[in-house]
Length: 289
Image (cartoon, rainbow, N blue to C red):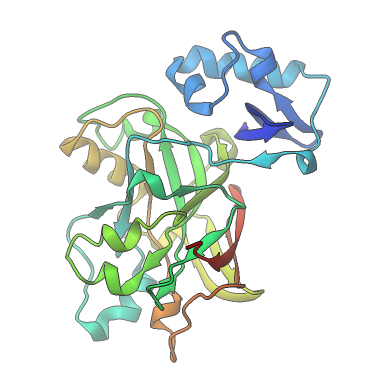
């Protein structure tokens, strides 16, 4: 399934995107859930019931008539992984960076969550706004100390992420958190695509365009730490919960490492696409004062 949160006629709803249009799961499921995470909290039975509703649906909403929201509106955790693609490591070796021995986790404060087609703010006090096209996952159930072999069982689905970054703030501290957490700088979606639709997540193309120019093109095959390894690693340190969002790294081609640097500015359009997962597209606008 491709699950989504959306607003139609002023009402927040959750549904599933199909070739025929959007199936309104809020109207069909018990309890009238208005967010995907409510379905996840219901466990495998609730997800299976959602599948049955999609298969039985006879009426569909026009996607053009709705505003699509982030698949998780208020995750308890939103984390990213630094330096997880070999092509990215190769482009920063001259700066003294090398392949990491362990995953480099950092927080994105959850107030940065943004819709897959909503504007990204260009801060008035920064000139180093950058993009990072990434594949992300959403955790499906509460878990701790998950093994690599068990990791697939706790993944609810996959999303497209843009790990928007303010480079000068990112570099002011080893944690990178502040530079990754500005408001609107966590767009992801457009759907939560369940693992059965994605198949092998270790062989998907990631591409980023700015104003129609291809800036990033790489495969998840070059990830240093694979999806299951990352889930297992993080779960050894902290409890993961349904709705937690993990953005898993970016291939080469970010704006700050181009020659000359090509940072984002108001009016730019950034599109990130992950094979089999979908695409998000955001217009950069000046931050409202």
